[in-house]
Structure formats: C-alpha cells, structure tokens
Image (cartoon, rainbow, N blue to C red):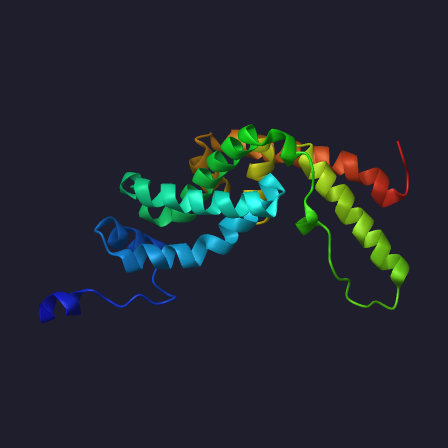
Length: 198
C-alpha cells in the first residue's frame, strides 16, 4: 500500500492536463477535480460569451463538466483537454440556445456594467461603453460556430489545430471561418470607430 501511494505523485498547479486526464480516466476523482478547477472559469466565460446570459451560462457550465466526466474515457489525446472540453461546451451552448432561443436575443443584466471606475474624462467612458455595446451586438450577428471559433482563438488563445480538433474541421476551414468572422466584425464596427453611420 505504501509503495502504491509513493507511485502516485501529488497534484500541483504544474501537473500537466495530460497527466490529470490519464489519472482521472483511472478513477482518481482528485485529478478530475483539478481539471475542473483549472478550466471552469475559462469554460464559463466562453459559454457566457456564446449565450449572453449569466444564469444560462452557469447551468451550461455544470452540464459541460458533467458530460466531460461521463465521456472522459473517449479522450485519447490526453494533452488536448482544453479544446476538447470547449468543444463540449459549444455543443451544450447550441442545445441551450435551441431550448431558449428567444432569451438568447436579449442581453441580461450581467452584460451591463453596474459600476464605472471614476475617470477624468466622462465622455471617454461613455464612448467606451457605447463601443462595447456595438461590439457585443456585432458578435451576436455571427453564426454560432463562427463566434465560437473566434472566441476560442482570441479569448482562449487556442491554436488553429486545437480549434480544428474541437470542431472536427480542417485547419483551412478554421482559418477561413475566423477570417470571415473578423471581416464581418470589422465591417460592422468601422462606422462606429470612424464616427460614420450607415
């Protein structure tokens, strides 16, 4: 028993995801808990950006990790836990949007700042808030897959290869979708940045 305990290294912040996945697949609950704690904030933020509703994102986060736990044995590329779990989150988000589609079109109170840090330039604060509103609206016009791919790239820093694995797409498809998303955002935001209105 003592030899068995010595062969199982302690879980630390430096323990790679791949090692945690392998240990969790063998039934070590502390390993999956470590994966959860390491990735829950990013998954929740990703779902919040996709669903645009705080309470819906909380429920979807729980569902994502429940599915990840149930399906963990299927993950064979141990070092790709992050793109894999974001892929699950994407599917959960799309299901949630289908169920409550009319709610997704409205921003909830969480998207409106409740406090503004005092600024010597109130006009700048107002313009920044307006630009943030336009950016949120522009993101909302992207298709679900395109928005998810862009968020994985910009917000979560995933490589094209990781996004391709999460979506089951080719790398050229990922690059094309992200490029088109950026072009659409630029076209919608440019009039607000230049002061023009179309």
